[in-house]
Image (cartoon, rainbow, N blue to C red):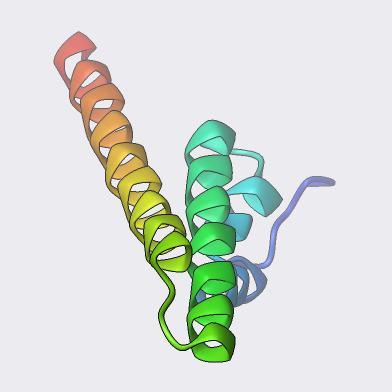
Length: 87
């Protein structure tokens, strides 16, 4: 019982920082890192778009963040389905 995790802490971490709840729990860490990377890219782009009034490079950063997010979900779904099929 020494490695108990707070469900609320995991939920709040995922709510405010995509993926950090997974990393906190120590499960699905690669998925959590993918989500957190996407979160960083997306929020960086949001700030830059706001400050620079939508310059092309910032939109590219935003789209890259969304692509990382989609790829992370796709990979996680693939791994999850393979795990289900093994049972």
